[in-house]
Image (cartoon, rainbow, N blue to C red; front, side):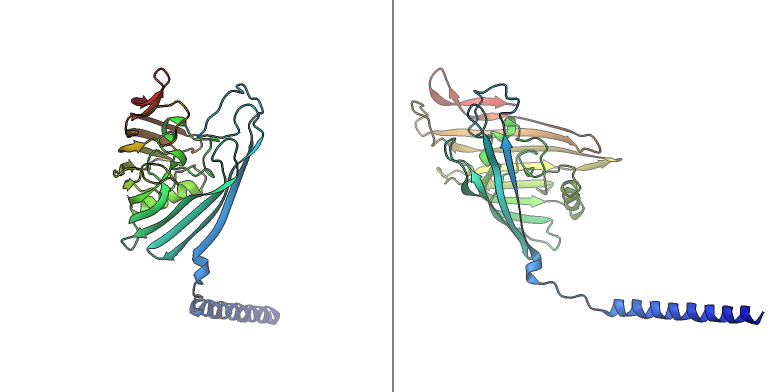
Length: 313
């Protein structure tokens, strides 16, 4: 009986000591100040590369595409499609920068692996949550869904020709305004982070002006292109559906021609498109569809002249 009392007393002392120790430890942890964030923790350097071989199971050796993968077709071997390093960071709460050079650019089919600037822009927020922000510099033009997807996240090896033909390299220099509520910005981020092949955060609403001659090319007239886009990711049960609509308009100047090809007197053509998008995110299976119509320059093989023509696809 006495032994039982001693055991109970010892157990009570041990429990009391353990509780006091835990409380003291928690109190110390709560009082410990969080170390200040170092300036370099706001910046990141990352990159990715894609190497291809396209002759395997090839059915058309004559297939070529200047805007696409330059290793397509006969005599195409191993090919570095992309070799990119990304520098990005939050300079302040409302200012973010993003710089991405590509070391595998191909100015022609006979010249490969040149360094070229892909992105160089600043995001400037105008409210505490950066729901309203301006993007200034060379960046992707908010037109289409697949055009905006990063090559790191996109499921197909290359983008669809229908919308990708609108903008070579999907980019241009300009100023773009983006708006999205904080909750939806987090949803856009989740759709990329969690592997649902999202397009990234290009706002629920986007509006902007850009040169219209595509990336790394100077403006050749006094008229800017104008673009607008609306896209919203709805949560319906366990699924997320994102419909979108977008359009742009401007004047495009043709300045690169093959021998024997003619143009209009000033080589300037109406360049405008409107497109719709519907995306059912893969949870676990998804559907992605886009379609656009418009007008733009097109080579007429019967006359040998670049003419303004209707387009769709």
